[in-house]
Length: 458
Image (tube, rainbow, N blue to C red; front, side, top):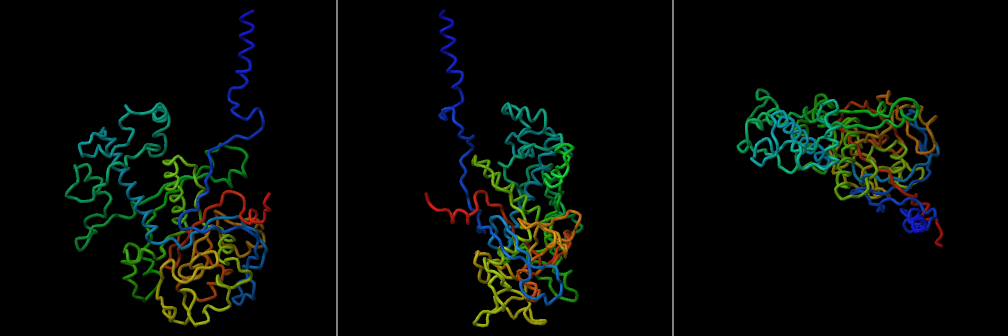
């Protein structure tokens, strides 16, 4: 009888486990508290509908931008074009990771482990010493690490030790061997200057091709995981190649690396390099989020063509330029953007080449240089007929087999027609130019801002 009473007493306890304070009601599973954060250097573009395309006669007779009403969702956009200083942060990160990986691999081959003796062992993979692993780390090490193409996937680099750059302080001959491999050969150096071999700076990333996976119902998830390896250093020779019979060596020599041009827009980057930058920026930010035990942010990416035009218009309907128009000068006769205003006279707007990324007045969305300075890569492929068949909600036509990618906004070497918010142009995705840069966007997560403003308080 006592056993029967005890069993009855335990039943309520069994049913109450895990219910918390919901009293058996449907309250929804609770995740981590979400704190919306405006990304640094970005403005929120509240989504909405607008008339995309040429609002006036297409005097150039290109006929690739007929008017069409479309709607885009809310997103964040960089207030300026990505600058040399910002892109150099990407290059420095890749350089640091490349050197640390080479040091760790050689240390692994030599059987060296972190010992604090100042040798190459200090740069060994963190899992080289297996004594302090957690059960999870030990399981991953035993079952997954080193199973990829290189044999070193998933292994953590030791970033607690600084890279030594002074040749007089190199710790041992193995360190010298790795560092020597990162520089151009001695026979290619001149005037006593030996620089990093930029061809060694490669960024490797993977992504899930959701569009392909959605079309194919069969097959494994891993069949749709793609890997890209991109050489990320800008092509500084574009200043020479883009202009025949022209002296632009100072721009080739100084524009990307010299601090005098740090706040100027980066150029000489291909569409593939711009995409790689977006992937790195996402990885870099989410590494910090993980360290702070916060939720991951939405990925950074290139804007779609409709997003770019919607943002460039700054809320103005049927305007020719981000400031409205129809002229490229204000009422005091000052040019409103950096472009080529007169035949052969590039400096009439007070700028021979590019200007600082935050020069001139921003549009009503606080975005600078959406017209002029440098043209900007967008995510869309160029098809002169794409407006005819693209969707009217978040339209974006990106055909991976079409290597022609849209550029928008016009540049310092273009005439005013290309500065118009509706003008379309293109370049091949593996081409770099002295007049093409980019800016990034990030999806806004949550209810559309305009919907919130229209809600009546309860």
